[in-house]
Length: 161
Image (cartoon, rainbow, N blue to C red; front, side, top):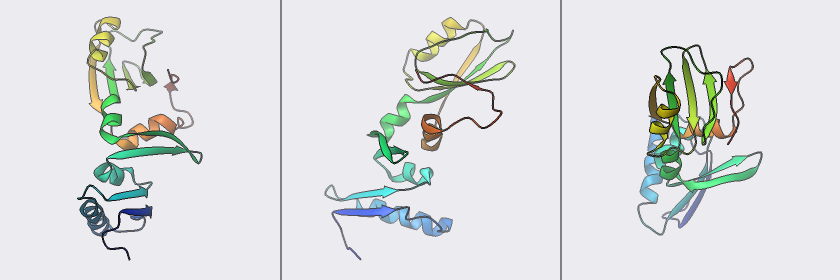
């Protein structure tokens, strides 16, 4: 339809495709953008596909663009933090950049929006005796953290900071 287009706009192009066809489509998208003067604008609910090919992402929420950022930059500033307590968790805890906390008996899973080199040392100083681990998040997990609502009955706490 459009050989070597400067701009190609696709709306959920992989919807309904089997995994082999979807992979071929994504490889074709990368091929089209191999030259600097080519751009593909595509929307998709398959965020794993977006993660594989996008240099820059835009987040839409309720028909409004709420975020535009380089994909790697976005992924570098988000982490899931797992805090395990040997002797029980404190009653209250507040730290900048923590977007949400899911608390269980001796373990917290936190989404940190402003992860940096000082994040883990600061957490460890505020929560002595706790073991703290950080894990990279996928684009889908970041999307859910930004716009998702906790499931009914989920033990979700915390607000955007």
